[in-house]
Length: 442
Image (tube, rainbow, N blue to C red; front, side, top):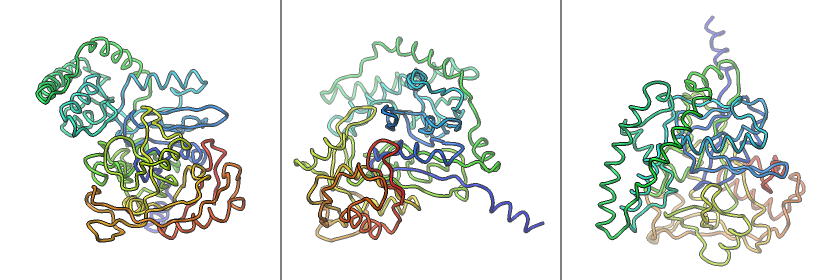
């Protein structure tokens, strides 16, 4: 009997995790879409609508903010997990855009009752917080993500499940508390010579928000932790989709210039209710170079024509915000660090084709901190961190015409082999374009 139980436990499916290893914008949306045919369920486990996943196929471009990227593969169940913060207004717009293009979102999407709601006053709080910081502002998207997670941790948040009973009173209490906080922050901002955040228009925002809450009630609201574990017990395969990137993790990222949630692998456990023992493959996504949005340290950032050229060729602008992304060479010190934190088992290399025309490719293999060289990611990456580079000859070939590994140029293969040695992890997929078909498996 004991052996039979052991065999049954071993046979159960495990949840695979796909996440970004840099500062976000690595191309997670495309890879989830590419991998989804292997899975029964795709589940988003953290983040909010500031994280846009861009997908392109059949000549169409789509940007997802909160809905998992598996929504485009028919018959798959998609789940917004408890670790996500949800803006009902933006969610409604996202659903309506997808519905207009022929995708039945309501039939294939589940939403966790434990996911927290972004209120209209959360957005105002976000703006007021930034204004009060003056020159020390972090550079948030202003979508209310940080204040919503703050309310969650301080036990003042509203959750999706709250809309089912007694919601109006709970909402008024939260709103009034926020207004008092905004008034205090406005006073601080004005005292520093800044501008107060206007409360005009809040009534109209609330009306639109409440209409979106009613729209949200039309979806399947579930106890997501039970759903995912019962799915695994029923031998269903699950792909957990992360947002942002590991270097923006609230604990391990470039603090305080980080997001407000755990973007690393462990965030899938807390953001979906999956035990660590139930984690299977961990897919880590990285670009052939590096980008970041907003303020914060960036050791390999390029301020010259090379950085501008990478931005132009790679179309490096925010999918949701449209903000210009800062660009630089690939940082292997940071990549080794995030691979370690996440327990990455397979690497997926994105946007290699962006570097096709460069005669020389550089890779940061170490940092020089106060004159001392290190291969370890330090406590703080400030102006005292100097990148140490190795240079490689460019491949000077249009990779977008390659459809299999044998067609890739020798210089590029040599570079990929170097990356695998440095990162001690296999690179299983190479993306050579935005379309789902522009994917080479190794």
